[in-house]
Length: 119
Image (cartoon, rainbow, N blue to C red):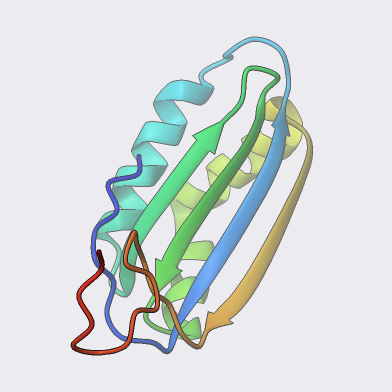
């Protein structure tokens, strides 16, 4: 779900969702794909990155224009159903963090000064 799409200049918000999956799919794959598509189509969503290891631990970071957009997505009726299914069936533990992104850079050139050409 990660394509390293460019994000706008900060500030913006990151919602960091970490979770340990239960064994078996139980409809998780289809719901995760649908929720990812819906989130990306939601007003204020700027992008998303996601990964999961072989043991079922996953991290999804979604990026949002503002807190109002995050709250609107959290309250979406279909997302509420997915949240409840996550609690009941898909996760043994999860954690959600919301952070304001004040700056970002990417590489390999990283924080090279303006006008500097990397070797």
